[in-house]
Each structure stands twice: as structure tokens, then as C-alpha cells.
Length: 296
Length: 335
Image (tube, rainbow over all chains, first blue to last red; front, top):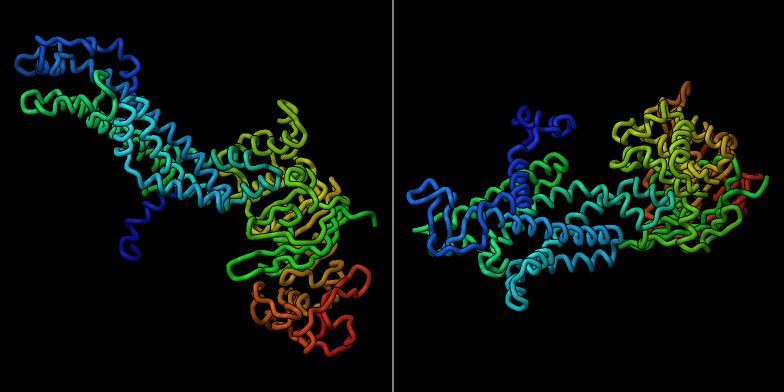
């Protein structure tokens, strides 16, 4: 990348250096999808055409409206117990989004606190906190959630706690790295010189300068958490039935996928869309606010 | 002369590193009176910055330790204060301006928020009075249209402007002692001159005691009353600027002065100081400058020279002055 492609590389460098070129087009697609699902989740009681819990054995495995035998009564068909798929997907968006957002908020708050403390105090505090972080990161999320589900029983709270308990380590690491860089900058020294104590420096000078990174990481991880929550629900260790959750809905259609493909396909599509939207938005935020974080 | 604002006595700050103990500040003593400017000059690593940080008790922990001496600020020993008491002294009674204006302001807050912070902290001002005082401070450091600049963010200002903002924050209290650690090194020459003028003006207005750290002897000549030359953690020569520049006694001071270009001088070459600054973790006995000194004597390698008074207010640490060997052969004629 030294001699030849210089002509190609240069405009890229110039673009990265020029702050004006950062204000790129908003990611309309991902914002639209996320906005849509947020709205659907909030307005679920109004939007859903039927009761998501209402069973009707006469209407088992009704296909979607455009297939032969489908009707407008069940636009996306029905499942094994004759429940309306569309309504269940609409209600399921609440579970997925709530799990994603809550988990990430918990994990980022704790992780950021650990990272700030480790980076600010350094020395032994840093060593102890980072070993704790490493240990946490070596533990598989799914395994912990399964253990929790088996011992305490599956619940929404357990899913959130199980994922957050592992996920914070990511934040701790990234934020610590940032804090170490920030601590070298003169404005932190200048704050000390002006008589600021630890709390003031951490809250006024370090934390605000890591918010961009936090925002990027949070957005990228909401998608990941939604997938983990869906995986857990799929395995039966997540949101217990009959609450509609996309992961468990996929699981319910697993055995009948050749006859009633819609039971698994539509919740799967919902997961795909939401996760894709969050990831695209996260990528965009990263490129816009923090181009140095490419490895995340 | 009245009682000095700051009176540093035999200050020792050591750094414990993997290579051994570095005597970064090794028995430094000086005083600065109200309205007086002391220049602190020396090569990189000679202990200038560590001396300044020691005055604020902000040496990098845990590697650095202030091991001994006294730092008397208006007669109170700062080394006897608790950390909580020190926090009330920092900024309020001792201010400091650092070298790099590009990173000395927090990029995410507006100039106004940053200037208001120390004012609110030191004077408890709120609301309109606070905003007015912040604008006043910016005006005092000659920033044009201060009220508008308060809304700007650091990246919208030039290096010189930012350094002025840092200056405004440093005099918010205003402090008794202001330490300027190479504040003009990264500024353009014309901006440098303006900034020095500004510092002098602020000093006059608030009767600040000013410690100016630099390795630019031109700046020392321009703004300092007295100058202390540091080498290997010690002040090797200290005295009034005019006297030190015309009649330096320490070979190191002489060498420093000979290494600056002069207009109209016919000398073909500048004299460089031979050799490297010493490794402070492996200082041999004797004078630290001995290995590079053109007029080194047997005695210099064995025994470190004590502080000798050349005349009132002018001290030096060299066997050439004082000691039994007064009048020993000199390496060269003084500049």
C-alpha cells in the first residue's frame, strides 16, 4: 500500500481527515426498520389484529393469506395451536427489543464503570479489574443462561441478567483502552491542576469523551443480544411459553417446517431484519463518530 | 525583599523505574517573589517539569515520590498538607499552564462550560454573574468577542486562542503562583510574542509570582527577572538574567549560551555541547556535568560541587568558583 495505489488511497485519506465529509447520508433503511419495530412494539395492543394467546384448534396451521387456503383473518397464517402468527410476531417484538435494550443498558453501565475505574486508577486496581474482565469474557453466555434457566427456571429477568453478566466485559475493555489514551491528554492533567478530584475528572472529562464509543458499541450489541435471546428462547432457556418470543416461535415450527414453513420463517425474518438494521446503524455510527474502532 | 510567594528548599523527587531510581529532582531550592518571574531552563529530562509538578504535588504516581524538602507557599509547607487540602490549593493558589494547547481543553465541552467550571468552583458564582465573569476572563486574555467565543468548541479555535483560554482558566482564582511549562513552544513565533506579552500583563495585574519553564533562552532574556539553569535534577546556576547571560560561571550555562545563534556574530559555527545528557539512574559520584565539561578537573569526578555564592543572588555549583581551587584554569573565555 505504499507506492502504486497511492492515487487510490489518497482520496480515502482526505475523506477521513475532512470533518465535512463525515456528515454522510443518514442510514434511512436501518433507522426506518428500527423505528418501525419500536412503533410496533409500543403499539402492539392496538396493532395486533388478534389476541396472541387465543388458541383455536380448528384453525391450526392455516397458511398465509396468499397461499391456497389462507384468509385475511390470519394474514401470516397460524401455528400449531391455531394462534395468529402476525399478532404473535407483533407482541414478540416487545420481548426482543426490551431484552436487547435492557441488557445492553445494564451491561454498558456496569462495564463502563469498571473500565473508567480501571483506566483512571491504573496499577493494582486496573490489574484486578482486568483479570476479572478476562475471566468473564472466557465464559460462554449461552452456557451461563442455560445453567440459570435450569436452576432458577427460565424467565425474562434471567435472560437479561445472564447476558448482561457476561456482556459488560466488552465495555470494560474498550472503555479502559480509551481512558488510558485520554489520561495522556493535557486536559486531564489541566483538570487536576485546577484542583479536580477523581469523581470530577471521571464524570466531567473521561466519561463524556467515551460516549461516542459507548453509543457505537451499544448499537452494535443490541443486535447481538437479540440473537442471543432468540437462541436461548429457541433452546427453551429463554422466555418461557406462552409469551410470544421470536426464538421460541422458530423452535415451535421446527418439526413442521416442511408442511407449515411460515411458523418458523416469519419470526426468523423479523429477527433478521431487526438485527441487520441495528448492525447497519452501528456500522454507520462507528464510521461517523469513531473511525478508529474498526475492529469492533 | 518581602517574603517570597514560593520558597522551595532542598526538594527531592525520585522516580522508581525498572532501571533503578532516577533522581529527577535532587535537592532543588529556589524562591519566587510577588510579581517576579523565574526562568527554569535546561535540557529535556533535566527535571524542570518534575520540579513544577512537585510544587502541585502532582508527580506521576506510583513511580514518582517526593522524598524530602520543603515547599513553602506564603509560609505554609505544602508537603505537610493532606490531599484534600492540596486540592483546594491547586488552581486557587497555584495555577499551571501546560505545553500543548491542542489537547489542554476538553473536546466535548464548549469554551464557556470549561471557563465557567473553575470560576464556579473557586468563587461559587451562578447564573448571570458566572457568565459575565467567564466573558470577563476571556476578555482579560485578549480574546476578541468573548461572549461569542464562549459558545465555541475547542476545535473551532486556533492553537494560540486555545492557549489563551487555558490562560484564562489558570487565572480564574487568581492564583498567587503561576507555573507556565513551555506554554509557547508549540505556537507560531508571532503568536508566541503576543502570548508572552499577555503573560506579562496578567502577571502585572495580579502580582503573580511566575515560574516560566522553557529551553528557549531568548524567551528567558525577554521576560524573566532571574533564571535557574537545571542539569540532571539540580540547579547548577541561578542568578539575575542579565548577570547570568553576560557573566556565566558554570561551564554548562556557558555552553548553553554559546549554542544559540547570534545576529552579527562572525563565528562560523555554533558550539554544540558534546556528549549526551547523563542517565539519571546511573549517576556517578561527582559533578553530573563532568563527562561533558570542557574544563573538567580531577576533583569534579570524585566530589559533587556544593552550591557556592558568586555574589549576592548569584549561586553556582562548580568547583571553578569557590572551593580551594579558585582561579583554576578555565576552558574558554566567557561569552
